[in-house]
Length: 424
View (tube, rainbow, N blue to C red):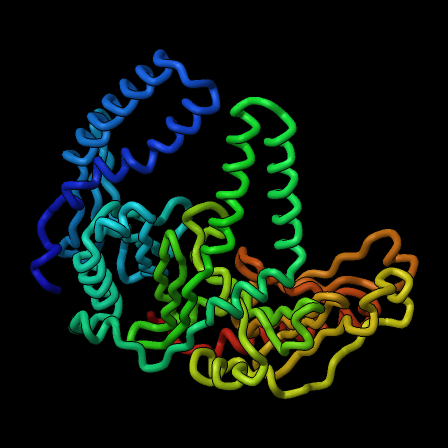
C-alpha cells in the first residue's frame, strides 16, 4: 500500500464551493417561481452565505485515509463526530461520478461501496480527477492484494465497445417511455403558454430539463474490459464511471421493443449485487443500452463468457389454458433450466429473455392468483438482487412449475457447493 493515502487528509479545497453551487439552483428556481422580489433575493443571499460557511466548517472536519488494517476510514461531523471504516476486502464497487460543474473544473466524486447491511458506502466529494483515479487504483489494489497498477494501465482497456450517440438517440425515440416524455414536455409547454405566471413556466422548464437530463445520461456510453473488471462509463452533462466485477452481475435481460426488431437492436439490462437501484446513488442498470444482434456473441465472449445464451435448449412452454390469462404473449411464455443458467422468456410487443446463474439465485417460489388457480397455472419466481431484471415464469402448468422449482433448487445447491471462492 502506498503512503499517499495512509495519513488523514481532506478532499479538495474547492469542495465547499462546489457543494454550494450544487444547491444554488434550488434557490434560483424558488426566487423566479415566487416572484422577482428584493426581499426573497436578500433571503437567498443570506441562505447562500450561511450555507457556504456551513459547508466550509463541515469540510474542515472531514478526513479520509486508508488505515493500517486495509480499511477506508472516513471521519466527519461538526457537533457530532462520526467515524466509519469500510473493509476494502469486502469491496463491491468503487465508482467515479462527475457532476456538470465539478466536471468543468476538473473534479470528481468517488463512491466506495462494500458488502454489508445498511448504509455501507462512503462518497468522497470532491477530489481532483487525477487523485480520484489514483485513490480508486489504490483501493482496487488493496482489494486484490496486489501491487497497484499505474494510471496508464488503469485507463487501458483490453477490449472496449462504444455505443454511437446517433443509434442511442434513435433507439430511445422508438420506445414508449420517450413518447411519454415528449407528450409531457408538450403539455408543459402548452400550460406555460395558456396559464399566466412564472410558476407554470418554471414547471415547463423544469420538466423539459429533467427529460433532457434523463435522455442525455446515457450519451457517450462505453463498456470495456480491463485489469479491474468490466468498465462502464456514460453521461453528457454528468458523467459516471463504474468498475464492476463479473461476479457481481447476478442477472441479465435481453430486451427488444417491437420498434427495434427491423433494426436488430437489443438492450442488455443487469442486476448488480451491492448497489442501490433508486436515486442518485444507484449503480449501473445496463451492460449496454442498445447493440446490434450481430455484436452480441462478441459482447458476451469478451465480458461474460460463462453466460451461454446462444444455445437453444428445450423450453418449457406455458400451458394451453394460459391463453385466457395472457392472450397476447402466451405463445412466448416459457422457462428453461440449462446446466449453468435459469432462463425466462416473455413479452409480446417487447420481448425479454432473462437469465441468472443457478448459484446467484436468491430463492425460488411459486405463486398462484384466483384466476390462475381456476386455469390450473402458476408463476415460478427466481428471486435475484434488486434491479431491473425480473425472472418470473408465467403461465406454467402447476405441476410443471412445482417440478421445475424442485429441479432448480437441486441445481442451486449443487452449483453453490462446487462454486470457487469469489474474489474481486
